[in-house]
Length: 521
Length: 75
Image 1 (cartoon, chains in turn brown, orange):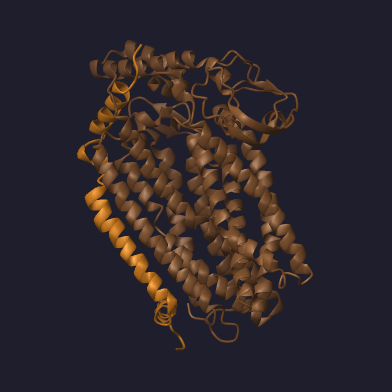
Image 2 (cartoon, rainbow over the protein chains, first blue to last red):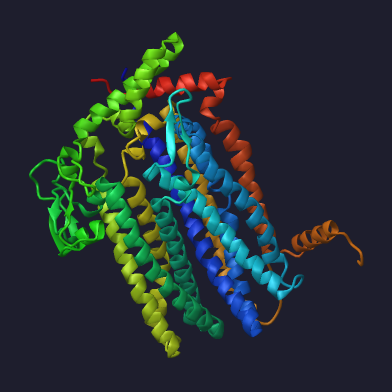
């Protein structure tokens, strides 16, 4: 066996996927967040009959439309990449990935495409009530689309509801609901959607602040800020709650990711959560004696509580996860990486023997091999791991991304709270410092969202599917140069589209809301 | 207009909506150019389905199983 795959091919395939996914995630959260905010504004218009709320909702709807138009279909590129660059993976995951993506496609097409037209074209053509329903259904459709994509992603982090069929070399879904309602999927969905809501609120606050700084459209801006601040505070508290739930799921299903997020090399009972720290670049190996931190400030016992809901619980570090031998929360002894590697090798050898036996029609060997494969399949992916150190994700990137996300999340709560208090007292109009801060915070909303995805995806390396398939076995055997070519094509295309979006968006913002006449759409 | 079928009403709704667009026209142009680049240029010339080179399901199964088995680390 052993067919060497060029590591640069793995890196370029990953880089291309990361580029595409990160670009796609520039548009999705604003669609989700701004969509809800404009729908709330339209609901106020429906309830009060106040035309200024109609104009306010229409303005944010225009910006929503620009963002939606530039972002639409950018996610399809990911599906192209699955078929070309990740063909082993695509085949291996089979219908588990196909089912949620098919539902997403149908929902996206029918729900969004139908109701978005009513939302944009129907202001003067359908009743107020029907228009409001269409607006909410557009947002519900977009949110449900995100749900099915996140179900597919969550399955990679926590593969459930499937069985591997060695005849077809595919995983086959036997429990749709286990896949669709897995706790990882639910938490991932909530956390991602709430992050979109926060970004939408930051966007509304920032753009409205710009009007105040320019001393124009003041009434519109202050009304928008009130909605943005209330909704943003609500969303950022929800994100705190869903973040805690997500961290608990990571601790239970992906302890290595949690250890990397916290730079925890040696396990501890009553482990503290790192609040602020600087990693030591001298730390090169998981088992060297170098202190991983140059300095750190911790919140005592909090990591244990987050991970196990007990302040004195044991949280394994990277070294412990590699060496094994500690008790799991279920009470069993955790296997070492080496033991898992041996089981993975057994599983892959059993697959080879099974397929050989099928061709030679040796039923007894088929049966024996299948039993060995099923016994060891949970560790299938470890059979591709040469050195246990490969199981350690990039700690620096995961650690800093996690802490940037958390610190920004806390900052957003504070900002929304201040905006709400200042907005209530009509002081926001005079507080230019706050207007500058709100405007400058828009990019931080994007950074927090991207950092969250870096934690989720870099933190689970080397796995494409947790414990089952590493990225090295997932990629297609292609020329590295062809992946490099498409990487740079995407980089160019995305840059052009992003410039187009920013230009059109800025033009629309400069033009401002039409508070007295029918808007253009 | 009385007695118009639902289909015609829907058609008129979309037709008028598109005709009255101002900003939307630029956005639709961007969407169409993007879809052309994605589906006509990138999909066809740069993103062929890797397993599309095999005619049958069995050939795909053999290929992927071979890939998975051959890339494994043997003791």
